[in-house]
Length: 282
Length: 142
Image 1: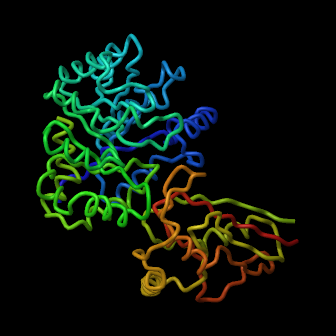
Image 2 (image 1 turned 180 degrees about the horizontal axis):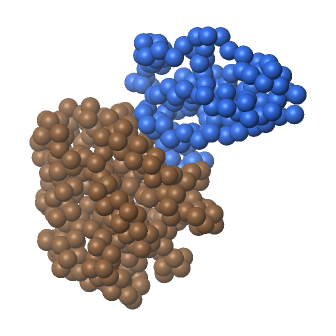
Image 3 (image 1 turned 60 degrees about the vertical axis):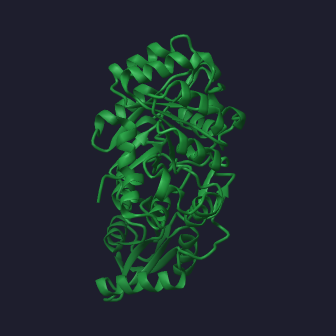
């Protein structure tokens, strides 16, 4: 079996970065995960081992110009990855409205050795086509690093979906054909928009971090077999869909089990569970 | 007089049985209580406390019986986003298994020792792991 990578997880409640109760409560309220408990790293490893997940991508979020600070900082991500580099892949975040965004990103890639960039249009209040994003995109291309964009509706407070409709990313794909980027959550509820973009633009990826109704099996069956044609991923999009759980909001273990139960070729499953993430990361 | 101790476990499997009997003996012995009761209570709603014989074959039979009674692939109403949590509730089977096993057990304490049958052991049942779990062991008496 090939490598299994969860490309979309939030380490906001890891014990090692939650020694301050105020910061913990801030994270709960900001992310809309109101009862999230502090998680020892060993618990994370137990979950990974049980589910057969080799590595997690850890996502921060920089909200400096919105609320004056990061939900999880690049330095915190780097510190976690440094402790266990074989299990974690660290992403950076920058606030696109901040005048030093590119400088911060250069530092994250060159000094903190982070592997990609996480941006959240709805939370950070920008449109993917805004001109202030252009130097950020160019920086990512220069460093051969991908971007994981939140796409579709967000369950976090103070988020507006109008910033994150999948179709808004088409212009980015056209103008930055060398930029690899992922539409997280498959852009739900606009999953057919996402599928259409994946079909046309090979530099766009999508992750499976969507579980907005029902059990994982029921929801994946609905989205990937009814809303989308049941063969679309297996036949046409197999090199662009990545396993991402959006843990801790969604059920990492049961989502993975549901993906393993899809009627895809074994080679498609290998691609979705890990090989596509390796290609995405570059 | 009473003595309460908490034990934290990081479980490793989705469904798992963890032996607690040694912890009971230690808490009773350290409590200084000669005659009374000891109660074992889990602090969660997707775990259980059970008393049974510590045999591999029984562990499999209990696990399989609960899986037959509470299959994973039924359309449970609890499979949804919980707004108060902001996260999915994908663990209806854990809640139902917890209800079936109960969340506690009680044993007598006499002359400073736990009174148990020869075949009896106490287990924490994990029904939604891996997870971080806390169990209280309380000795009440004199």
